[in-house]
Length: 287
Ligand code: 5GP
Image (cartoon, rainbow, N blue to C red):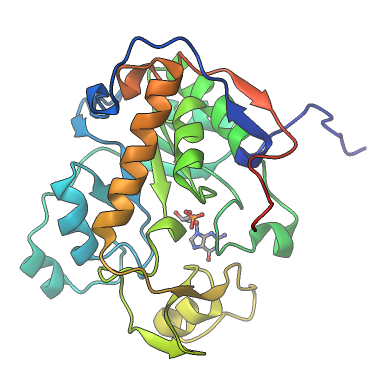
């Protein structure tokens, strides 16, 4: 007989972070840099642990150049040619990342099999249709809380992958215990993204699509194979100019979160986090 797990599972939208006593006088006092030594490879990483998703629209060389200036990195998509890679001359990370999973037992299995960082998230992505096409998924906040607990018990690390729609969600992912947060949609529509700027109904837009969408599969695999369904959407997102402002907005929001909960460093954020369940995140009066 199938089992029904009736435990409460939450998404970013279901919670807010409770403010706490803070001795921080300014957001500029907050240190967002983290240093990790990975369990299996023993590689060390230092930076602001926000990663641009390896989607061909956002995970571009152009994006990587700007992100690197802010000590963040970009998971470059896999569709560049060897020649293009040589030109870009990247410095390859050697730590081993695996995923995507959403349960503690899978995290433990992957770490014990040699992975350093586990990517957590099935179905939360902005252009993902997995939950609709397959019925499979797990609310992302709960997935991150549960997977971080399992990973940290083994001195492993996790990436919260997908489902962040605003800087507050990024803060919640870190608060839930994510070591890294991967973002796709939040970086879409910028100059550094692949694709042309188009004009639609007098507005400038850019194309953004899932890597399992029929757009991506047509582009790289000659179409959707007969045995599978596309699990991604294609959307037009407003053109947003240089990604620099978006980066500053995300980092500014994160620093502000840290001051509200009294965390002088990003490292302290999850220890200072108490989530409160809410039915509404913000006022809808002008929406
Ligand atoms: P976002 O930040 O846009 O909410 O989520 C980005 C993540 O969505 C990516 O890192 C990747 O894990 C996931 N993703 C990207 N394309 C697809 C797709 O076509 N289908 C599914 N199921 N997930 C996708």
